[in-house]
Amino acid sequence: MSKPRVAVVFGGRNSEHAVSLMGAGSVLEVIDRSKYEVIPIGIAQDGRWVLAASDQQFAIEDGKLPVVDTSGAELALPSGEAALVAYEQGSIPVELGSVDVVFPVMHGPFAEDGTIQGLLEMAGVRYVGSGVLASAVGMDKGYMKTILASAGLPIGRYVVVRERDWRLDRDRVVKEVEELGWPVFVKPARAGSSQGISKAHDLASLEAAIEVAQAHDPKILVEAAIVGREIECAVLESLGDEPPAASVPGEVLVEGGQEFFDFEAKYYPDQMSLAVPADIPADKTEELRAMAVRAFEALGCEGLSRVDFFYTPDGRLILNEINTMPGFTSLSVAPQLWAATGLSYAQLVERLIQLALSRRAGLR
Image (cartoon, rainbow, N blue to C red; front, side, top):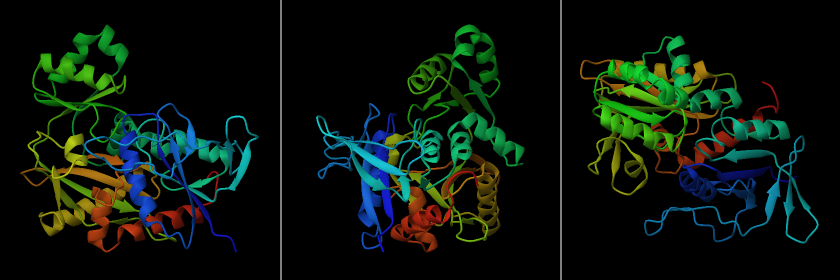
C-alpha cells in the first residue's frame, strides 16, 4: 500500500513568513518518512507556491531570517481536486498526484486566519489544525475577545481602533483609550509573533504606536496593561471522543532586557526561557487548564492551540489570547509544554497528522 502523502506548507505573504519557515524546518526534521511521503511546499512572499528547494534555509543564519527559495517548480492546487500540479516554464504542466493531508505550518494573515483553510476545503484536502471559522476568529483579536467574554472567560479591557475611526474620529478614540489608563499595549488586530506591538505611555507614544501597528494591519487593538506573570498552556484535540487535553502550564521569562515578550525575545537565542511547570498554586493550575480547554472549545478549535494568561499578584487569572497555530519549532512554547506533559515533539507532529487524517473533508 502507498504511504499517505503529507504536504508541509510554509512561508506566506505576511510578516510572519520567517517564523513559519523555522517551524516547518522542525516538522520536516521529525516527520516519520517511513510512514509518510512528504512534500515540502513554500509559499513565497509574492504568493507563488513552489516545491521547496533541496537547500532551502529554514533557520536564522548569521542573524538573517529565512525566506522561501523560489527556484523550485511552481505549484497549483486546483479547486475541487486534492492533487498538486507543477508548472515549469516552457513545459507542459505535470500532475504530481493527490495529497492526503496538508500540514500548514503558517502564521498570520493569508495563512492562519482561515484563508488557506478555506482554500484547502475548496480543494477537498484534509489539513492539520482548526477550521475556517475558528482560524478567522482566533486571528482577529477583537472578535476573539468577544467570543471569549461571551463564554464567561475573564479578559482584560481593550479598545478596537479601525483605520477610518482613527482618521475621522480621533478624539473619541483617544478618549476611549485614556479610559483604559496608561500605559497601554498597541498591537495589530490580525498579526502574531509580537509583530508591530508597542507599549504606549502617553498620547504622543500612542500615536507613534498606532502608526507602527498600522504598517501590519489597518485594524488595531489597544489593551490596558495588566500587571502579572505570563503563563501559557497548550491544548490538544484528542483522538476519538475524549475532550481536548490541556498541557501543564509554563511561565514565560524574558531575559534579554526587553520590556515585554517581543519578536526578538521569542525567536532569537538566549532571550527568553520557559519555567515548566509554572510556579503557581495547584488549584490555580487546574483552574487555568480548565479555562484553556473552555477557550479552545468556545472558538471551535481543532488540532492544537496555545492559550496565554496573566496571573496577577492578587491571584486572578486573566485570559489574554488564544493562538490556533502557535509557533511550532521544537523549542517553541507549545511543543515545550507538551514535552513537559509527556508528549515529545515527534509524537505531537504524529498526533496532529493522525487527527487530520481521521477528519472527514468538508463540513464537520
